Image (cartoon, rainbow, N blue to C red; front, side):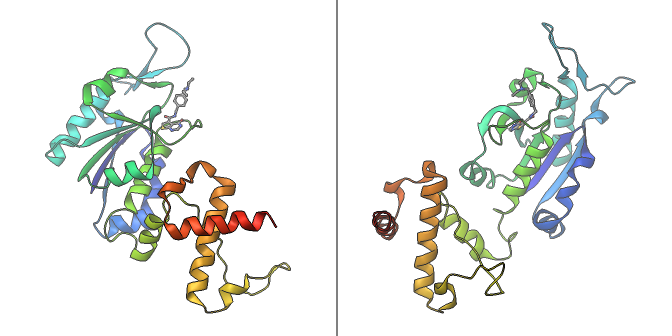
Length: 245
Ligand code: 9D3
């Protein structure tokens, strides 16, 4: 997969050189290219923003540099990417949307700053606005990195342990179970007996039940009983029975 990112802060993307994304790039499974929006300005001051038509506070990002940057990308890549535009007004990023995006060969992400981007960029380029959630960050750069990071894990061969991706997929819609490693006691706290028992089937059942318990307690909005397996429904009934004791 190739991802082109247009930004006024290319240096903010240092995190994409390390960890899973960095390794995916080194191995040629993912190509990320950064484009400095100011390189596509035409004036002496390399100005990327301007005052809003209609008045009001703040600045708006000018449209022409984004059009020119996407032209540059298309010329270099030899085709039109699917274009994403991080925005608080966008469709919320979900694992389902990421799975869909992971099937694309070429994406471009246009990062905005200031109060926003001239609306004609979205309209003129067919860019899709994407939000990463209901809170305010100061620009599109962190959201762009969230998209790249989450996408990279879905590309074949990127996450070494295929089992861990499969487990994420199997557990989608459920929170994780608790994890423990050595030592057997720390800060006066032990480890649940079953994890030391070597009884693999009991361990699997305990973990699944913990996932269901934590999801019901912390994120009941995620629990759709009709989407659960028969075993999950039985474990959930057990939990409810235990509460009555
Ligand atoms: C006054 C209205 N604000 C909109 C909610 C102004 C505003 C705040 C923050 C305009 C742009 C921004 C910068 N944020 C993003 O570009 C952004 C974002 C976000 O703030 N939250 C969640 N997802 C995203 S994706 C891009």
